Length: 241
Image (cartoon, rainbow, N blue to C red; front, top):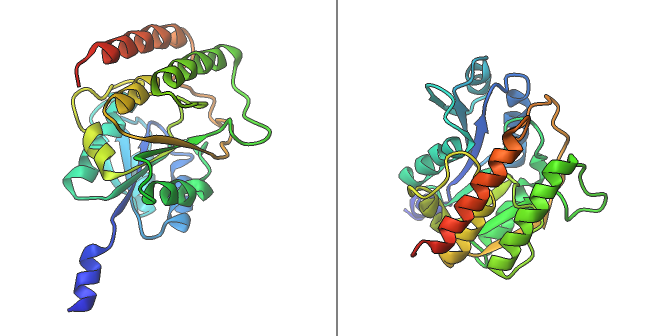
């Protein structure tokens, strides 16, 4: 009887990995996550990939939810959050499927959010010695929105675009709501969290260069990103909680 009660109390951890055309990297990412947090369930959200991302992830033992077409990074993340909320997961770890996020830091992120002092733990690539090289235009955008998020929240935010995070259950529920952005959930989400009374903390992590050369912020997308982010932040500041 005692063993059954302990099983019921065991905390459930979900690792959400949004992926778009990551057949070359996804198997390695899933395997590394399995090594670091073997007790967690791994969910790959296949966001309309045209390659073998889904098959490669399934072959490694991950659960896969596939969108019929590309719906956006934020939508892919929210698919994972809704799955986590529906099936009663206590914690969500999220990381990208392109191999940039070093899985060795999953335990660090998880342990910080498990302490209960904060609701979201963000892995910052800029808090480690040596930093991380980012193209100038993108770095300027990070600095701008990091400054805005810092001023609004009253705490220093160094990496507002980091997708390497750990979330507690209150945030999982919060992220399932309609206000969660479907394309770029970055500084605007940090503003939303602050206004909802949810606590955020950054910890230093290592991130690798993007090996496939693709980016959500290529071409003219940075201009749209800046416009959309400023608009989204303004709307969040005006919105009543």
